[in-house]
Image (cartoon, rainbow, N blue to C red):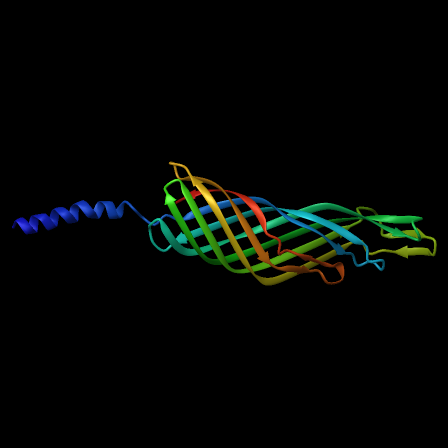
Amino acid sequence: MILRGSVLWLLVAVAPSALAQPVASHVQVTLGSHRLNQDYRTSDPWENLMDVRSLHTLGYFYQRPADVGWLQYGLEGGGHVGYDSDRELLVVIGGGNSGVSVYSDLWSGDIAGGIFVSATPVTSLRFYAAAGPSLYWGALRRSDRGSGTSVQGTAGDVTVDTRTHRYDLGLGLYRRAGVELIFPNGFALGASVRRLDATLDFRAAGSVRMNQTYTSLTLGGRF
């Protein structure tokens, strides 16, 4: 009778504490700048170069741990979008006697999913790393913002195709790592680094390599 009462008391005492620790998921919104610092060639006959310095990025990531504890692993999913606009190139024609300004808008993005591991040595500090495949895309739009693309050069009328829309889609590999400062209310503030092995190939309009590591500010929490 005493043994049965002891077992019953133990079950009543342990069960609520186990139920009080559900597996919490980690959610992040990322804000960053993907610095490219490279040129890509235009499709005009003179193969002029257009500068691409950086992409402003916005991302979202969701991590679902397999179990509770200070050391966790599980699945991660999310994606990024990046945008760069108003890059201007002056195409010079006829030895500098005339030219036309070309403006470029570049969009990029990817949808990623992989595996993550994390460590929380203290309740207020969390480290993590993740990797997996990523489906990426890019869109390039060029315009002269004028009424036409025909300009006068020394050799007569010359037509430059400044209105271009190009797209690319591919599969790559992403890796990222970061650290978070976790507040008592569950809100998390941190920083992360990410790398995506990808090249946006716009055929005659040129290509942009996306495989530079970049940093982001992360805002999130546990739910």
